[in-house]
Image (cartoon, rainbow, N blue to C red):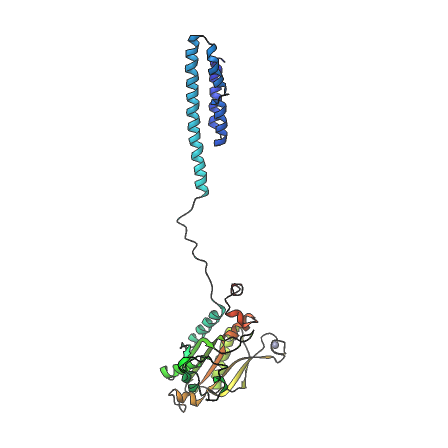
Length: 340
Ligand SMILES: [Zn+2]
């Protein structure tokens, strides 16, 4: 092979090294350029056939070409490795200045939501939102509410009695008693909260559920005030005007006492399965606070009077969202809860 051919081979190989696009391609060029079967190795082996003076200069040429190729391979190797690293870094790049995604946000239970809506509504009407103990004494849960000693509600069937004569409150009414005792008249208050009954649990009965009770004590409070506030309350809950009617109802702590119905929101009056063809749906108990209840809490019924009402928050939630089984509300099943 003449010297010129070796130089041509060198420039050819240098060009291929410079354009090798990957480390694999470069390795193939390396084998071809410097491997045992390469043209350069072959030229080295053939040196023995040359005259001594030619052999020295050919040896220098081959060494120089080999060194040039090795340097070029090394340089190209570095470049390719660097760009591979850059590609990887680009792919794995993370912008540390972005805000962190943070924990997944939950949402309020439908009971909590409706309770807060009603608290906001009554606060805007000048009512205080009061809280009271869930473990009550017999006086605040029954006696102070004019519930006679022989009333069936005191039976073991209905009440969870605790040691020492205390009980798990069966309604939120004791908070009204405590409100009257502590704040006195005039008084506007609501008491939302959890209550307990010794019930066997089925689709419409729970041992634990939520109520919201309220009262307004002032001079010259009449049934008209009661109707106004109840209509306001129910219209807010259902998001539209509702028609209400009062029927006589007995509750020991009010006189007169009423059952309050709303005109069926499904059929609007003519009758349907939801209202059992009556056109009306029972909503809550209410009435004018019994003089005995006022007197027991130290309020003079000759001067002060007022209305009281109690409604099942749990039932309201079921009506608003069309929930057909009360047990869903407390069993913690996410498939249910995530729908709200
Ligand atoms: Zn109906």
